[in-house]
Length: 283
Ligand code: AMP
Picture: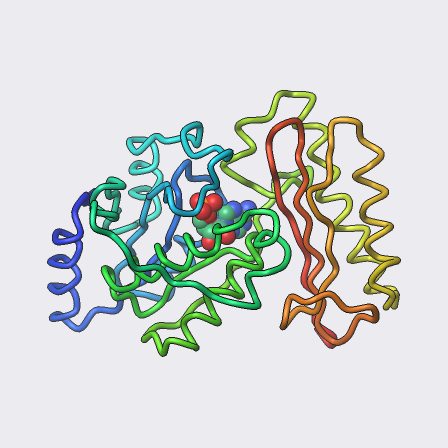
C-alpha cells in the first residue's frame, strides 16, 4: 500500500487504475483512524476494485477557536490501519499541497448548512464542501463513503453531488459505537476518565429520543426536552444544541413527520462531541 502526498501522484495512480477498467472507492477522513473509519473502508472494499483513503486535517473546516492544532495526527499508525483493511492507497497531502497561496475558490451550500452544526460552526460546511469537492476531483471515485455519525455532513454531500452533477455515488454507513454506546470519534481521545463516563449522556439521550419517537411521540419539543434533560443532569456536560428536525430539510418542525433527524452536540469539558438518530417511518 502506498502513502501518496501529492495531487499529481494520486492522479497518476488513479489514471492507471481507470485505464485498467477498475472502479475506485474513496473514504475521506481526518485520520486518527478508529473502527468507525474502518467500517467505511470495509464498505468500500466490498463495493470497489480499488480503495483510496484520504487522511487530511482540513484547516478550512475549523473555526479560529477550534482544535485544528490539537487534532490528533499519526500517519504511521493510520497507514498501518489502512493496510490492515486492504486499502490500496492513502492520500496524505500537506495543507500547502491542497491550498496553495493563490487559493481562492470555495463551495458554499445554502439552506441545508444553516442549522445544527452549521449554526454553531460558521464556515465549517464551506470548508467541508470545498475539500470534499477537491478530493472528488483529484481521486475521481465511483463511490465515496461517509458515516451517518455526521448526519448533516452526509446530507450536505449528497445534496452537493446531486446539485453539481458530480459523477459518483455517495454511500452512507451506520454509526459505529463503543460497547457502552458512545459513538466512536477521534475526539474521544481528548476525554479524561471522568469525562469519558460523562460522555455517555450523548448516546443515552439519543436512545431515549429514539424510543420516544418509536413509541409514537410526534411533538418535537417534547422529544427535545426528554433528550436535553438527560444531558443537563450531568455536571460535566454542556449542551451546544439538541435539535429534532425534519430528516429531509434539516429544518425545525413542531410536529414530526415521516422522516426525523434528532441531532445533538454536547461539550464534555472542552471537547465537543456529536451524536444523532434518524427515524424513517416504515423502517
Ligand atoms: P472524520 O475523520 O471524523 O472527519 O470522519 C471521517 C468519516 O468517518 C466521516 O464520514 C465520518 O462520518 C465517519 N465516521 C466518524 N466516526 C464514525 C463512527 N463512529 N461511525 C461511522 N462513521 C464514522
